[in-house]
Length: 242
Image (cartoon, rainbow, N blue to C red; front, side, top):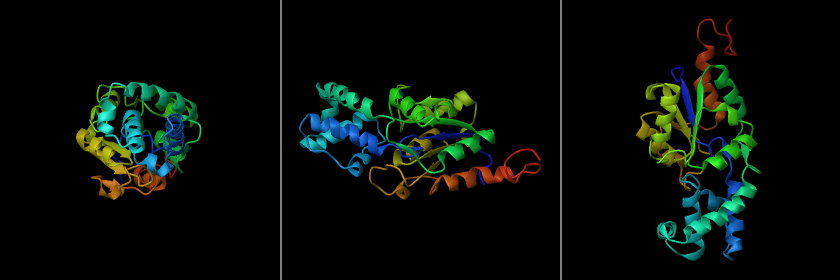
């Protein structure tokens, strides 16, 4: 049981919400605009996790044979980003889905008095739109996006900002994500890390990442974080005082 957790921090894409379809749709609209071959959702999902610029550089590199690192540093890359943003603006928040059990777990964590936050590498304008589209924007304080601070994941800055705002120690905090990037971020911040296998770990098995625990779904998260609450003396199975 994990009853000593006061703050639960979540990654967004691939953890709370399956956004690969809408990201792939925007990517393919962008590629088609330049006459480049389009990609499968699985191919695009391998690049989700490091932010829009990194994903876009990989997609262009795949289409042209250029180096993604050189593309990202090239003078004309900002024009590609602006073009992609126009397409992603059309698709963001339109077709993604919450993973099974997410809403219920967030409800129950809130009722149990757990503090909730989000740390993602997605740009803030898109982070907020996705959270609002799925009616969970008001659940988290704070929401740290890829452009909220000077450094994004795997640097620990976002998690550390969540700890400071909520006045919670690393020892009483948990970061839940879906990738090796999330595992590294949690390690860098000194918090426990759990990973879900249903996300976008660059096409690699998530159990190869350095996580404290692999949780199969949100039902397992619920049992691990909330079963101990119901077992405390004077507490009913729903977490209300007896």
